[in-house]
Image (cartoon, rainbow, N blue to C red; front, side, top):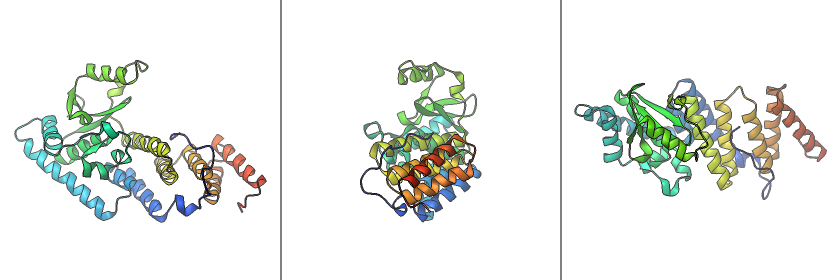
Length: 288
């Protein structure tokens, strides 16, 4: 489940257009296409809602960094080349003072401000590395995201902390520190993350941020992208319906509840959706 949902309607009822737009629908469609083609940049930029012109400019920026890295590779090793271009020259770094700012989880903003969460900074390293001909894999440690440069026997690096190189022992210590000792180390933590896994982690971060800020349209938008990422799962669609319902967008909520009932008829989510539809009928809400 992507985060939690608000339990009660807040403020005046909202109509469906306040929570969902044609622009959002187009962005989700672009996201789905990018995921099918394994296009990390395309998926992240669609999630941002970047226009075609904005997306093109961001891709050009990534290409520019990659060109600089290819030049550096003539004299340096891959991880040092990436660090020199992205950290020393460009100034990409973590933003610990405003960690939960929405822009830290948006590729468009990270490329502009050169500040971000660990996972988005890692994504920049991955995208630049890909174009520079370097294998850069995302490593989703519990509580912190890093990269490995150079394949299975490559070097672990932390883009959030100035590209600092890490040993396996340091990774183990980091996980222990961040979890307060609650998470036992597992070598599987060093396995490269999949595209779907990376995007799910970004969406979970955004869901947490928008819930903290209580921005209903962004909460729903994030849930909709998660449903697009997990098209065969009922729960993400139920989350969308609950968000719309809680914020008073009843027509949209009804449509989404019905989609759960019709699309996943034998699921627990469908039972929940059907029960809520019955409640709305008993409350004399017009859902026909």
